[in-house]
Length: 373
View 1 (tube, rainbow, N blue to C red):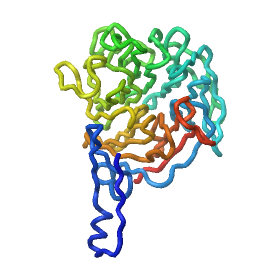
View 2: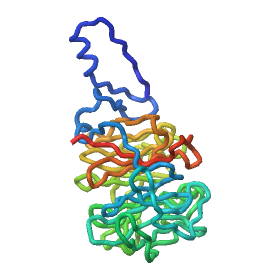
View 3: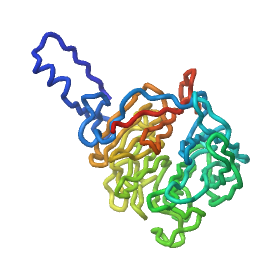
View 4: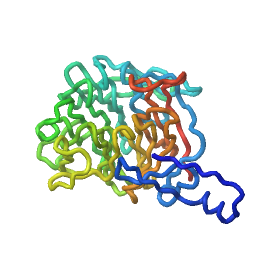
């Protein structure tokens, strides 16, 4: 995004006020959105409902390739992709080991990926998406103990047979407002799988908490909820139940999509907006260099998107889906995941130790920032 610096000299006070309160929306020639800066002069309209304020607080540091963050009762858990560890965040930037998952294979982008908890029910499990030498799978674990002493208990595989590769594994899991478990899967390097509805790859899957097929899925006896995806890694729902997903493109366009059951999102035939019958176009798109979107969270009309190559936290108001607002551009490096805490704070994970970033002395970190009430 082009930044404009304005020097103010001896000008009339009315001009000064106009300059510092003017909202600048500068279209980026490389994308189809309007990008706003995240200073006090540019947070307005829908963004005021979820404005980030203050300096982010470091909650944990010294983590190696953290990937997913979840809140479980009073505890905060983070997954470490390469080590296969789930850790609980304590005070003073420290963490403790909850459990190390055996049988994980990590080559490049595979390993221990997403985690989910079902906060809308008495479901006692922690759900985990990870890679083995044979496949990607979803396993649920009983969590024993309480805050400060949690331990992984009995494991149950609820879904296996998702093809894996060094790259394009998807891996985000989350419970929707309907109580169903959703999972994003990548094409695992086989782009044709995204259009094959008999394949679990290149999809967003929808399942019961035990991995079984819901009766009201769009395709009979199938977990497939939407297809034609390359490598989706973020899912979130707005207040009215609309589902959104972020997706890594190949060379041209990364995407933010509104997900509708049974619809085809175009990969590998199309990347980005194509305006072609039979395919759903993204509601917003960016070049991979300015985005590479991963985790996503929703709060009060605003989607917050973690960006890796873009090294930015991007906000998109669902009432203005063609616009976006940038926070922390370049300040913390690569950002992998973002969640909203039970106390309505925004937490996010940096990802500079994943082999593609430039880690600082305290990386990687889990950080939190306040949302203006």
